[in-house]
Length: 235
Image (tube, rainbow, N blue to C red; front, side):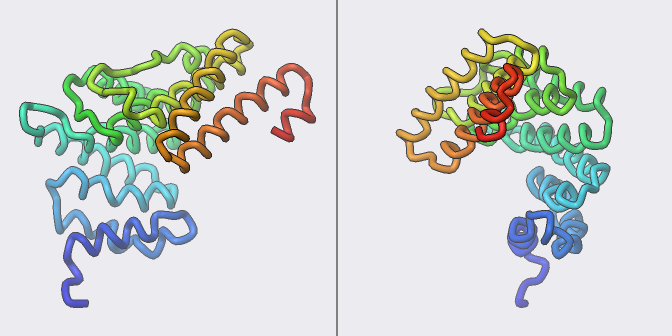
């Protein structure tokens, strides 16, 4: 009430309603962020949290184009590209794929992976694994998913972020099982189980549960492809 236009208020409200059944409550805040911080990369990204939940793909894409451009225009010390750039690209790619703009999504993923000196953080690691995985899985390019590189970018200390590495192995495993590559499927499951153990040792409970879902999905598809529908449904 004392400071209705404080950027923190807008940021908080957007996160508070960042869920499809609630997102409409934050439309005013998403639309108004532009006037408060029109050149701040994260502020330019935040409205898309609401527009994506509402299925307003074109608006979500446009905010993230602006966010990505602002992040590239404002490098960190030493010319390092902040994690706001890959984060915006990941959201942008998602919106583009949902609206059928595949070629633009492919260009942005290629540009992201070719960008040197990206900030070595979890936010970067997540986007650098999620974006290429989305590109393959959303298009049902199973062979492409199976062939994803194990580590997509050399800026990241991947041993620090097993939960991000798991995204790549999930995509590789799903691609392998859907394209009939049993060796690739087994390798992906082995890696996911290893990564899940590491996450458990580090107390990353949320990500341990997600890894279980990733492993279960691949195992279910393998059972289904082998004709064991009952086991597939149960898993």
